[in-house]
Amino acid sequence: MTKYVFTVTCPSTRGIVAAITTYLAEAGCNIIDSSQFDDFESGRFFMRISFKPELETDLSTLTSNFTGIAERFDMTYAFSDSAERMKAVIMVSRFGHCLNDLLYRWRIGALPIDIVAVISNHLDYQKVVVNHDIPFHYINVTKANKAEAEAAQMRIVEETGAELIVLARYMQVLSDTMCKKMSGRIINIHHSFLPSFKGANPYKQAHERGVKLIGATSHYVTSDLDEGPIIEQDIVQVTHAQSPGDYVSLGRDVESQVLARAVHAHIHRRVFLNGNRTIVFPASPGSYASERMG
Image (cartoon, rainbow, N blue to C red; front, side, top):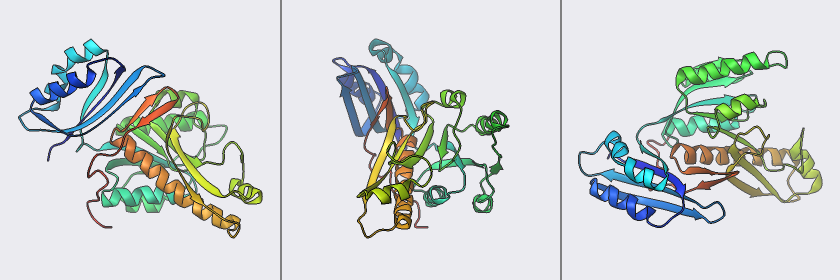
């Protein structure tokens, strides 16, 4: 079944929803699900609609014929085909739990993306990646060659046509230039102990303080380290009975899940930037379904 997605943001005013839904109905489209939000603080309106065409209506026609409405409401909008897989590059260092989780979800169809490359500053996961028939690129990063290494990374992104970079525990800080160039298209994951427990062994520090919740945060990368707009978060409870090693293991699990959910939201165009925050709409029916079991 052909299914399209329409996303829009614009200044909030009367008549937006009526204009959009009337347009889709007159174009022979049946709305499957719809989410909208008015931010009274910013004065912005956000909307995501999933629909199927019931007449011979293609994306280019829908897009071009919508111009008049878009201009009237000063809209930033897009029509997209839900069957088209977003191209992504995954970057990883020496912690492989998020990478392996993403590869598994991708393999069974639960994460419908096209992984065009995996980039790493270590060789630990070369065999795993190659065994998935995915190109693996080893790019060593040092203080002396950081600019050259980042230029090589961007060449891979551009040559593959990647629309998204996923930092699956990639332990290098990206430059301001790269963050700005890929603004809203780089997703990172880290523990949620910041800013309380920084540096090495945050889980050990948390254990020593007797924390009762371990969490993870996935966000868009900006030049402000670990302070970009948050996409997804989650927690797991711990007790006095857990060891620092238990904390690490539980933390890895929640990090993997949170990153996967953030990527899922992004590739299904459910995330809207709203200043330093995000609007994340619910998933469309069937978008979590896997093509096969394993």
